[in-house]
Image (tube, one colour):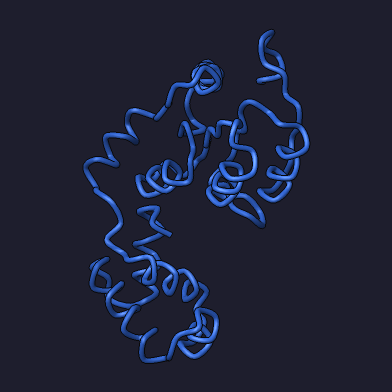
Length: 182
């Protein structure tokens, strides 16, 4: 769709975040359009990498997952815009043009939801521990992955459960993912 616009040239199309970063390093685009959930390196991590490796490239996140936490994380990663995929095509094209011109673009409904729901209550370490526990790994394995003692991991998981209002760590993962905090 973007390639049909007279003033937009699509220089690359890739299927995962690592390839997006590699192609951006190679082609030096003005704007990179990323999804939040991409195979391998996710879109938010790719946005951070683009910010560091191709600083003149402005990132527009376009996703099905319009969650307030994702919006906050995308902006923290350096994205210049965040739109949802179910927006009309004209709005996506307009968002690309506006981001290219130096403006920030955020889906207004998602911006309102983000303001209403607030930011993630999880500390960086609680976020890390919960992310590594998301696949159901036992505490011993999570502890080895994050280089902490099992007791410290249990403490972080307990704090995350409390802060999300969950009943278990699986529920805490579910709540955090639903809100876009993971």
